[in-house]
Image (cartoon, rainbow, N blue to C red):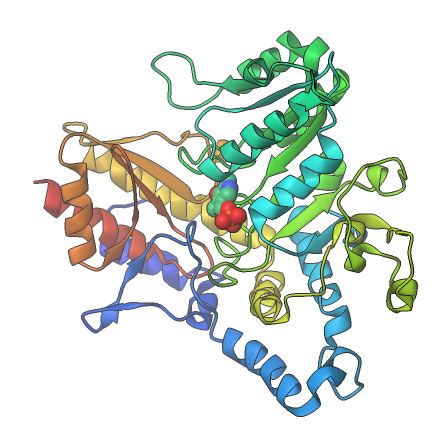
Length: 431
Ligand SMILES: *Cc1c(COP(=O)(O)O)cnc(C)c1O
């Protein structure tokens, strides 16, 4: 598209946007009586107007049916089956079979559960490759998993300090090159147990080449998992065809399912019939037809369902369902097409702003195939000051120490006008 730096042009793009009606499905927070320019859907997605109805439905069933809401024919969506109502949507968003995905727990919990099954180090193969500067919760999960596995029966299996291989950009670069990721996998191949990376990196906004990384890991007998917190609902995924072993995500970022919303996991079907996989089980992973017999002896469900521990978190799952139905209505491919244009427009306007003198450096890759909706803007001195002024003017963005503002134009509810106004405000604040 031939972009132009005018409000008229932005409004024309909105007028021609086939997804424009979706914005009205969301509550947009207000600043001094006017809509905010909300650019943090990568942190907490906005509330769909339909969410209240979905949650109230379950409150009503609880009110009217009590415990019978689990099975009763009068229950709108019986709670015993509630996770199943989410599956078709999650499968579409992740390029998975329905049996390969399930919503449950929270993200970091699920990361640990996956690692119980898929990080099984030996004294020869024990290394984990991840990106340097991973989200702190992932760093803590990896660190403590390594410590947990390093010692067995008083003996050291491997040195946990040597086990974590962190990928860093080349000197003077901000993001990783795929060739460097692949060569690092090769370099550590004899000792490599697991590649565990983000899909989209939370800080830089870089989208990694999930397929190539997975193939390379498998070539050397390692398993490959992804944390898709910033990828799910942001970019289309093909987890099944790419052969990914497992993945986890949260639902409160791009998936708009509310603070602390229910997380999800993907387990490739090649693992689902392996009885030797260790796992930490609970009754919701036990064969559904036997679940209420309350007998000894864990019989896993087939597919990702086997990793469920507890009965469904129904209220957050209701919020999740409300949002997922919007995704299915819009279609992730269409959302992605708009997203590429919207983020491309922001990039174009920022480059215009920089045309005389570089004021803002975009550290996110400029190749649309290597990013999602987010742009990470690195600022010179006084970045925090600028960020605060943006907030005073109704722009909600995200500040990360030491000098980065993250902004995401989300195709479900952000407009080209939002993007234009944001950069126009930056221009005024910077001159
Ligand atoms: C948002 C995010 C988290 C948050 O973890 P919770 O368990 O949901 O609190 C973890 N990892 C990544 C990569 C994230 O982006």
